[in-house]
Length: 230
Image (cartoon, rainbow, N blue to C red; front, side, top):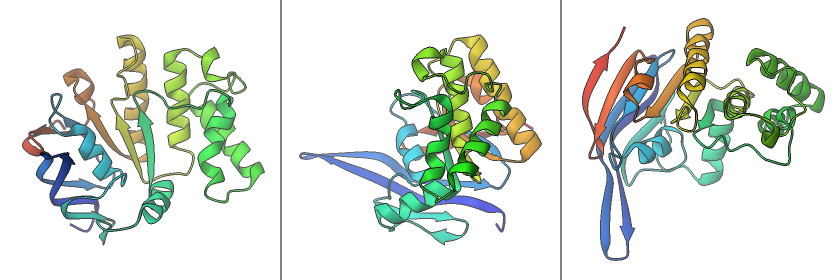
């Protein structure tokens, strides 16, 4: 398993709501290898959001282990997890999560500021990434001046800012019409194919999941079926 970039071993996540115990994950085991495009698919309440938190180093498990590049990160502090996220993982969210007061260029530059990249480097790379996603002519526009599809492409450029090993896309087409969603998925597929980027995508949409090489079906907090597409 030398090429495993992320490995979840019998991961449980239990939330306590007053006297009620909610088991969001119940022994989730999953291996993501370098260069894979994997979709995690499941209905509402299957544990998709919690699995995103685990895979993306946004939370730690109640029990079980999470290995990133072979290193156990299951019990790291929030600040240590934040450092790992900044360097290793780029996030694309359904809600875009762009900062409304910043231009597209400034939004893409922002993650690099936390990695001590110089201002000139941040600006140059952000311009290159916006050109890559076809928005070189919109870099000085704020999110409110962009369409949903354009905002998501800015979010993709931002996710690529620190040259992460892994892109984690949480319902990346959820707020887009079908044509724009197809364009975003085509770009992610191209990114995976041409640059070998590891992509983990969480979705409830069977059409969107078909873009992945492998689909992991999640139900009741564990993987119940695996489909290999290619």
